[in-house]
Image (cartoon, rainbow, N blue to C red; front, side, top):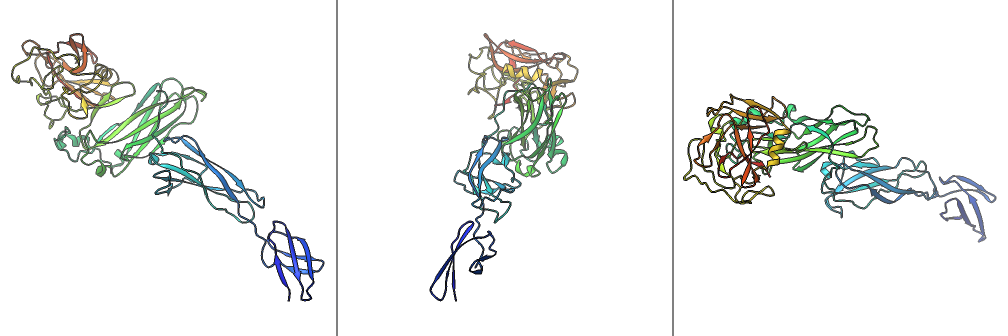
Length: 489
């Protein structure tokens, strides 16, 4: 009986035979990795098992790219195999975690390519990737090797503003509660505009980018900035020489009727939707972008563009108006109070003066363009608009009118703003003004005067809406009485 002793070498095998006679026979034999029958001059010998062939290795796994939503991360690694087996199709799996130590690490569904586009659910998370090396021949695959975590993932930082327009529905009211409280209006009025996210007509919305000039490589993205109202976005055009509209389709969560229940203008669910494109026709220029913010709440929803690219929420009613009334139907109840510039309390309404009318104008700084002051009469989350914001309302929205615009004291005249002549997103009744000397009402039904926070020498600037001119500023005595329509801060 003889014993066999095997020394593990990649290709050469040293076999020592110890015969019963006590004489050792040493042979060096070339064998194949799988453990085959081989012959030597001393006879035929069979290996006790296969020669060991190690699995491939992935090492030096790293991630390159910017940890910002919408950016592309790329996995990098080195492949090796002790037996020089060539690499096959190695596999990838991306993971997200709560911190750089990997707490609550979870595989990202569908993220199995060498690159990964950071998505909204990655915000404030940490990302890693695992690489599993695969060889063409021999034992395979090898063990998964992980990169170090990168992050936290930040929100999208848009490049320079893009020339063009980006439009679509920005504000949604589920109209289920906050009935005539929290500056939200009556549900009975709001229900005509109710956003029902269980309906496909609501939870799937289109947003249109219209370039100015010729651009290329148009793509869309989104960030959920409060809650998770958006679940997906599609659309874009990767081509060149783009001059026409490019449309994004945004899918909203079907649970928003529950998620937004009871939310107001101050704590609404929000998201940013953005478009990025190259500003040259052939892709050789630089990336530029436009974005808009959407909000979902259980509260009346009104607003307007205040610049070519910025949309702002406004309160739907004038301060002092009856919020149970439809803000788009001009009647006496939506006219509200008259305020003197720079003063926190109203001095009159449509029919009465509250106490003594003051002829003393407020000092500079009592209302401010820079920030909301303690004398600002608007509720929390709102402020008196600036002159520039009123200018934007007049110039970057479609204006259309209701009523006679006759100087006869009527309550049924109003100026409407919206994205088109059939959609009312902001309505300003023609409230006129009260005289700074005797508080008499002037021009009601023919004009509307709405305070800004902007001073003009010893006077102040008011937005003046008329029968034929949407944009008309008026410098007026700070002691006169005009309406206040609050804008979100």
